[in-house]
Image (cartoon, rainbow over all chains, first blue to last red):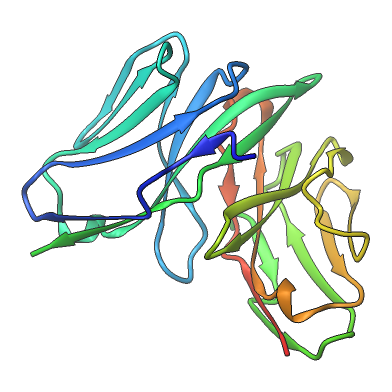
Length: 115
Length: 114
């Protein structure tokens, strides 16, 4: 039972265009959402995050949108660059025990930016 | 800081053998996570510790898997006996509660069981 779902395993976009990666979640206890980027043979690295009290967070070319009522978030990359080609994981965080936080990941979306 | 350090980077072993994966978290972090990445299931949480105590091990697939965190600077994930279906990349990550889930990952251990 996946609590965080990324329904698109892959996405291809042209350089300079917008990339939109989507993520859905089911657990209403999640209060913080994150996107990670992963290159081959490396561990995932943190990209951008958003608190559940916000609906948008922007960092340079990257913007994350959160729609709590729909339990949906998306990552927008504008403009897309070939170096953005990687697997993008959506993740959600909740307090699980005391101050401990559990981090649950989606299955990832492979983004390919074509030159 | 060198980040999260995992060893070995690659491990090839025969079915039935014991495998031990090691992780050194970032100094000062009090949460440690073990994840497994496969093509089919993406990043699965196996177990995580807070202040060296296992909080949730419901993701551990079978009794063949066990994890320990004897102190704040070291954790192991052991598979005994190993099976070919355990072949995957295993990641360790560490975090602080105040980071709200922002975790730092090691480079992973690619395990191949033949």
